Length: 606
Image (cartoon, rainbow, N blue to C red; front, side, top):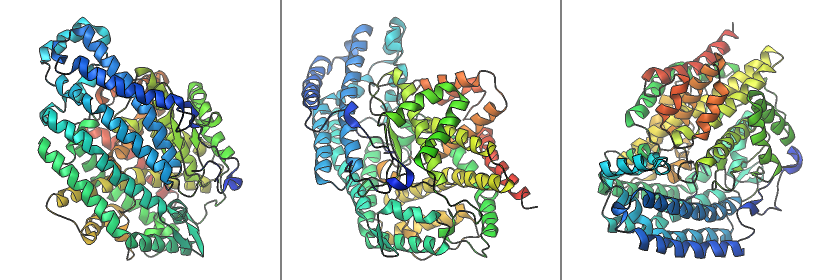
């Protein structure tokens, strides 16, 4: 089944653009001109016919193909993936621009259902690949170098071999997937439709969350309490979505014989469970020297005896509260990217000039930010909700890193370009680091340096500590749901069980904070996605250390890594830099960078 990957309005309904300058909007015509474009109709007809022809030509016959015929089969499958991906990218991106529009929601649903129906006959493809004898497949690879190029794809498919069901059941699950998608859409539409009232002003969730970084503490508190009120009013819906999604996953995992709820994610990430556990253990062990230590420092800066949840992302008292114009944000990121390597600057330019970014905050637009790769013969699209905060500049740098990665990996083709989530965060976090270092170099005073360092530490804590706490919450949620239905209070209790541990003893938790699990989209769209952020941050910190030490030819090796897309395992990709993520010390190297920044902040207090 074809879906928009998640990290994942009316074009005339821009709001707040004057404040930040001319905010760009998507031009989706590189995909299709409209929902009734003749090219879209042509592609849907081609898909229906080609899927049927593909099944007729190959079903029950894959094991009998020679190397050349198997290659042709792979190439035909790749083209099907490309056309289906183009259709769903267009439908999904239009929907995310205005999730409250019934016509857009219906169009996306119709496209998803059509493609699910068309592609159901293709379920045999991976099942029969897993029945080919190892020796026969190895001989095919030896005989045909073009086919051998796809070996990583075959390896990932065959990793599912122990968990494969009968052909009939696999087709049933494929068809049933649209039901799970409907629960995801219910979540998206509920979130997008929420309204919050602060000081008499009606806001959507993005505008309300933005208040959590306001200088005025009373506004942060008001926003937190309003978020809690609205989440509580909708808590039964959110609990139902989580219960249903977790139960569906438990049933499928049980039938497949998965050893854990997390195993499916590890397989799709092409990462070993023990590597993820080493990461998790290293981060949890580091809570005291990272988040606990930093938030105690921040408590003193804010002049507080105790921290409240609305102080976690508060700006520092001396922080510049001006908004950053879009033009300044663009210049900052472009300078940082081009300074690393002029090729990075060139790759970034079209995002700003060709309608590849949708930046404004608008009613009904999906919250958050993402870079969607679409398909390899088009280009990525970046979504932001830009509000002019310094953190929004870092978000721009992050998503453009994804975009550059996706552009470079596109030459691998549809089946090899997609990067496992654990490596997908590499270029984005590296782009953030480049932008941060550029801004740090420009700091003219000790206070400016302190503000930048503190902001970066907070971002890293949110990326590493907070995401591992999210991961622990998900582990507990899925384990508890396997034992029975969970009430909202049950889920609230699981959420609170990881918060104090990760944030530290200086925090108090307001009544209502226990519902703040409700709005995190990754829990619904991509269970256990969140550890990829911590993986990516730790990996980039280690990678940046190699760069900072003046590793010869680093830039070329970095570009080669991004160009590889999903064609190589993390061990192979990191070897040229002398790094190995399966070594427990690897994670300590990354975490020590965060700890080092906190050391510098503490030294400024003397």
